[in-house]
Image (tube, rainbow, N blue to C red):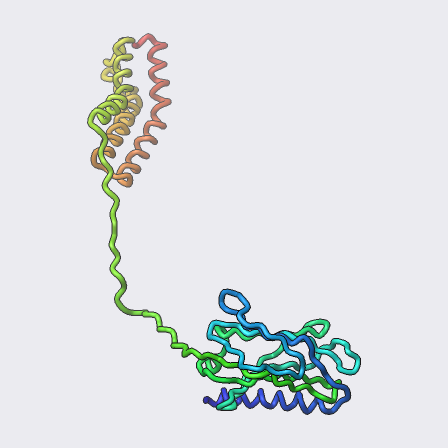
Length: 290
């Protein structure tokens, strides 16, 4: 036992002794009623339930398994007035019959003198759960307003101990399980007739444009006879042709990052030259140059 554990148990014994000493310095006495001991299984079913009348004790040891929970409930009263009251200290002690090591549980006292305490073996200290054997159960009640403290032995509690193994330390550096990557199947190319159909749809505006020029008999010689005035028209048509070529290149070989800068530049040229080109064509038509 370490020095810290020894000091802890020493303070527990000192606390019990102080309660008993303080209680003997005043008048009155304490009585308890409706004492009930219950052992609950992990399925939350009452496996054993026994009621006692003070100063009766258990006729046989109460067995507590590693996964069980022990519950004790009782009512505390003033023996002279038969009125419920709250003691200053209420304890349930478990004393090992062999080693005389003692474990102290605090009994919670609520209004009207109703008191209860619970021992869950799954959350109990390792010193208690790892040592099986018989423990003497005793209730100690003390208060400064009563001269006679109550020290009541309930009986024997038989604990079936289990050794808690320390948890395995997690592996921080070491091999990890192999990761098997599953890649998605590549996308299938559409049928050829679909590609050809949409290619024709893309080229249709140019076919309509050339057909419209033929229908209205556009005088293309003006582009040669007036080269300075035709620069905006040539730039506008070239930007449209460049955008169509970029879309074709993106479909066949370019990626998005390669296409976007050139497409933005071509769109800017088309925006800046489009209005001037249409204005120039309108001026030629009004002058009869068509």
